[in-house]
Length: 104
Image 1 (cartoon, rainbow, N blue to C red):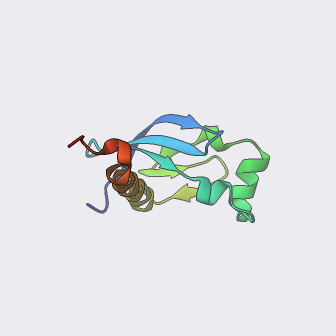
Image 2: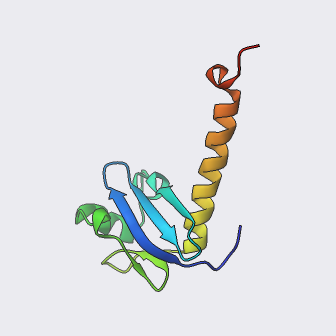
């Protein structure tokens, strides 16, 4: 993974699933599943504020990072790493699924 690539723009937001579709400066695109942060049993104070104020869908890009109006920011490298890990897991699962194998 190339480090230091800023997020260019938010392509879409799904507040119901805590996911954000992003485009990076190098053209790479993906959807970040942020449930591990926003659906946690005990969210941190800034996340709790976003949830109380129904602010999740108001995310934006600030200085290349994913940000919210209350000052909460996520590192673009961390977000991209989460997206790439999720893709790798999904790819492994699809290769193991019986329906994905070609008939002999």
